[in-house]
Image 1 (cartoon, rainbow over the protein chains, first blue to last red):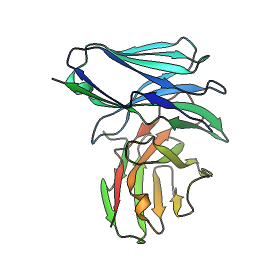
Image 2 (image 1 turned 45 degrees about the vertical axis):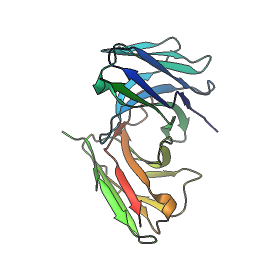
Image 3 (image 1 turned 135 degrees about the vertical axis):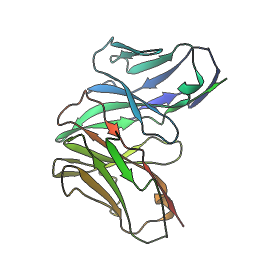
Length: 114
Length: 114
């Protein structure tokens, strides 16, 4: 059984604050780690797909790191803005049969207060 | 520009009355997935199609069926919905064998059971 855990479950920050949250996952049979942003009433949107230990990726004010040996990834948001309010989902990619599958965490719900 | 389209956005059905949710894609991706997400929980994979090959998750209830008549369309049929089937249903697509590629999601269908 593959468990992907995210913490914290929810988070409130003030506009301008920087923040980070954690995704932990089983490190054996690792293929890839995905981060998605899911805004209310919209579709989940891919932020990053990370495959290599030590990977760091950046998209604007958002960045992510990956440690496959210890099984965790951090997502950082620098200078949070109200439009960053969303649920951030991570998911581990593992192989089963003929296609790759994602196992999701339950997400971190971020609210950025103006 | 929507690439993965789910209809309807909201669906209300009666206890025990069959319901069908639809998903279409313009990405020409080989793999299509159906996820179920209940409140504040991780999206849970129900099944996926790899081209025409159907892959059912071991714990997906028999009540849930799927059809993929062509590359573009995939349907989720719930034969006799129970109160516990009320959830958000997400459709997603990905390219063949591309484990390091993100999944592309629709906006979801929120299903309510009366």
